Length: 284
Image (cartoon, rainbow, N blue to C red; front, top):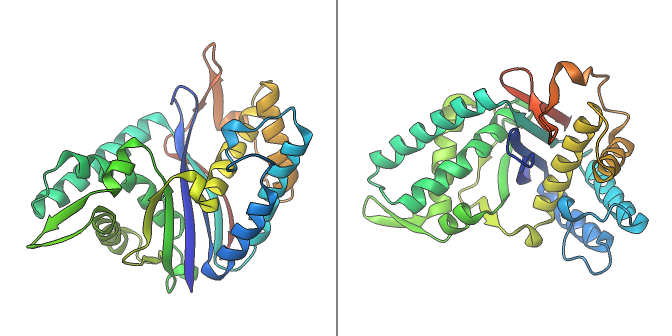
């Protein structure tokens, strides 16, 4: 089975809690998903972007609800995964430090010293490793990720434009990232699907409905969590209600106060337990 995946980062306003959201489904569903998503775009909007939702506009709220419903329906195909994973601060610091050392060691072993490549690989690798962990199951052992679209930031966009010299040859920086991720997968998550040689694409979100789906899923899910902890803003409540309306039959009965809290005058989301808090909908 060949898969496509979209990946985006998520974070609270002051970065107290951060993580990633992921959408994965079979490649043969991708074209129809994108075509239907295009038809659902609100009039005049270049993309679905959770931070730009005009929550007072009923038509726009309905479009985002329909987009999430389309995502859920598409992900009911066997081989699919919808997930968002938030990291507790202490665990995040330890994980980031580990990945930085790992990437630095691998790059040094093949003679790559450029800061642009090193910074980009360190930025992108943790999310790839997390996706491998989430997909590490016998259901996906024989699968291959043929296309993985990651939302770009300043660091990764510059990284993606690089070509690196390795052992007398040259290759795109994204190919180097794939080699690094594959080496890690084989050691740590061997039942996770392999990455195709040219799978990784670091893109602007406006060019990828997969990235847009990951963005909306992660943002609305995080606002659902916040809404279940304490009273919050009308915009957050609107996103939480849309998320709940689409996923209500699969949402666990959870005592959210045991998992997270809202801290400080800005009511910033923080996790109470070490590790990661993950929401998943699987159709393996």
